[in-house]
Length: 237
Image (cartoon, rainbow, N blue to C red; front, side, top):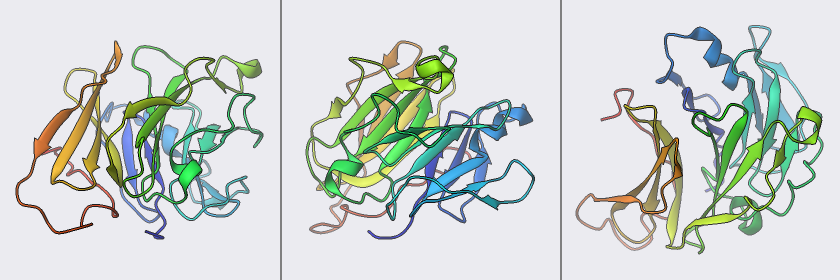
């Protein structure tokens, strides 16, 4: 469980793992959208900025071994915010006014893919910040909404839209967001005690609170699904 994972999905691309692959799966013919993943945040006060062409080390306020995420402006590549699932920092590396005491990854320890950022569809400058709990802990999955128009343009979590419980069942430590076919997204998690994937549909109407469950067959054994990470093939099959 202590393997490092940097996980970011913006409906634009997927970054899986520190030395992982970038797979442009959405707006993939518009190269400027790739700039949304040009700043990474991870580890202990660490980060990388790719805006100059190669990786340049930056200092962040993080202090964890896994489960961190960051998002940059999809046009300019400028850092917008980053989070470990417990706090949410703005581009000046200050905790957002309402960005403390998030529930999920930060409240219970280290989760492999503990945090994920997804854009709010048809709402420019707004993002869902998902946070996943540790090894079957319940409630398992939360989300908050970040609005970049707040806090003098540095962003803040919307009042009344923080720590919303999405899943009350025990889940594993894997979480990934995948583009759909109709300007939609799917947030995929896995039950911790059963061979079942749970996929939450994200559309312009918001996040569905009723997942699509897919049973994959025979149990793999006690505790087999607790840790590890999820990945999706490039063709989404």
